[in-house]
Structure formats: C-alpha cells, structure tokens
Image (cartoon, rainbow, N blue to C red):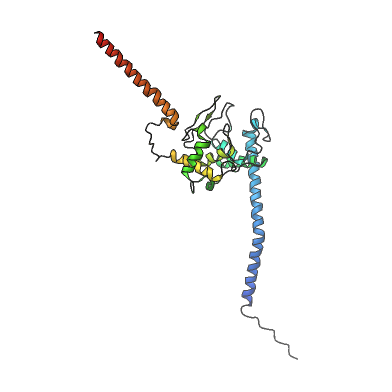
Length: 269
C-alpha cells in the first residue's frame, strides 16, 4: 500500500508564521518595555537622590542638620520641595555666607545638574512644590492686563508697582524683580522665600502666576516706553507726586523769597 503523499504547504504559510512571530515579539515588548523604562527611571532618580545627599552633606548640613531637620542656624527643609531648592541655590542665596536679616542674591556656585540632584534629595525628605515646567511660566496664553491687576493687589505693597523693589523693616527688603527669570519668579510665588508669603495654586492659580510674570516682563522689557517722563524708578504715583510737591513747591517758595528780597532791597536803595 502506497504511503499517502505529504500535503503541500500553502505558499503564504511561511509569511503568516513570520507575521505571527513578529506580532508576539511586539506584544512582549509592549508588556515588558514600560516596566524596563520605569525601572530605569527609578534607578536614575535613586542615583540623583544619592548624589544630592552627598552635596547636601558638604554644603548644607552644617546649618540645616544632617537630615534636613533644621538647627538654630537654619530652618527645616522637610517638605519645602524641589522648587524651593532650585530657587534658593540657583539664585546664589544658598549656601548663605553668613546669617542676617535677609540673604541677598549672589553668584551661583552649583551647576544646574547639581542643583537638580540637591532638589531631588530634599524632595525625598517630604512632599513639596515641584520645579515648574516652561509651559507653566512661559508667556503663551498669558493676560498681561490681568497680571498687572493681580500684581498691584498682591505684590506692589512690597515690590512697588513695576517690581523695582523696596525697603522693609529691620534691615529686610523686597528685591528688584527686573531681570529675574520667569522660572524663579514662579518658584518664589510657589514657595514664599524669606520674608515673602507663599501663593499656592489655591491662592494664585497657575494661570494667575503666568499672567503676573507676563506683566513684569512687559513693564520691564527693553521695548517698554515710559509715558510718565522721569519716573524715579517706578516707585509709584504717591511717592513720585510727593517728590514733585516737595521739590517743586520748595523751588517756587525759594524763588518767591528771592524775588521779595530783591524787591525790598531795590526799594531801600
């Protein structure tokens, strides 16, 4: 009895098998790739925290304590968040050279990579405001007029009407905001550094902060034209009006006295 001849395979069978294999491989990649990426991100974050802890031990622990708990020379950093670290260190305020009524801005001694590592370590100590993205503080979609209204309501009392800064009590001061980066202005509103109150999203929304930043950029920009002549640094209409009254009226009185004296002298002669 003859053996039955083997069935011939369809010509497309090999192609179907290949496609199934590729589909399975893709499916496996879809299952395992996200896990691998998450693990890699977690490893990178852990490394950043470890590097930040070493930087903290050298430059910050003396005043803020070995675990960020604070000392008599520096406040606790638990819960201040990454945004506070980025603001204070990137503007050179921290590490502070010496204690005082207020720590001034100075040259920064850390690279941005090191600042990010310090921020990662401090953020690991307790939840707090995160570093804002460019989308949050960028000019897109900002309302300059609304920002001016918000700034005059919440900020002008200390920083004056155009952010030129001003003196406070006991040696403290509100710094000049001209030339300060949008990122750092946003972080200052988030965290309330030194004498400044904080403005969380429940007080000033993300859009409100964006509007305020756009206003400051507008009034202090290179293309801004002052319609008020000699503005005395933009310290405000009350102070500028007082200046005009004192010196303007004083000059008129001096001229009147001089004219009267000359007239009296002429009559005597």
